[in-house]
Image 1: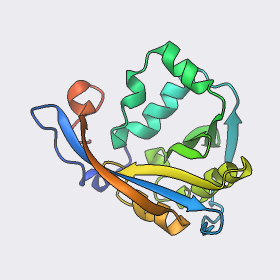
Image 2: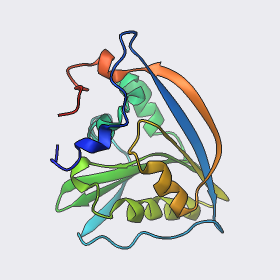
Image 3: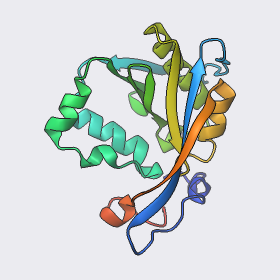
Length: 195
């Protein structure tokens, strides 16, 4: 983990003995008219590739490398066959961003929803996030979506909600839920505190 990022995780509460974690999920939507394109092209040469038929192994690698710091775990629970079926669902798209072959991040669409969006830790803070978010929104709108939806939660990057709002997303509802804490389920994978 780059030395500059440990503060990114100060908002994540320590694991509880009951293995649960409370999160507030904010659901947002954006209309074509409300989209504020704000992502300048990054200083790095970042390419985005649509992966037409992603393998389960590739998807698991992306999901883990981008999502582990933010405690993503739900897709980890899916068996390979269930995940393969999800990846082959009509309306599903996976777009992977790379710089000189290194994984920068990815976004995943399902119909009019940005299901997952994120960067690897090495590329956070380099003004790539807003630019990649613009590419995700742009792609969603080319699919004839009247609006685009996504959600974020209180475990995600501390500026995620602000980034989405600056792009033009508007919160439509929020909910608080108790989820399993992956740091308790898989302590050897989700180390605490982050190193």
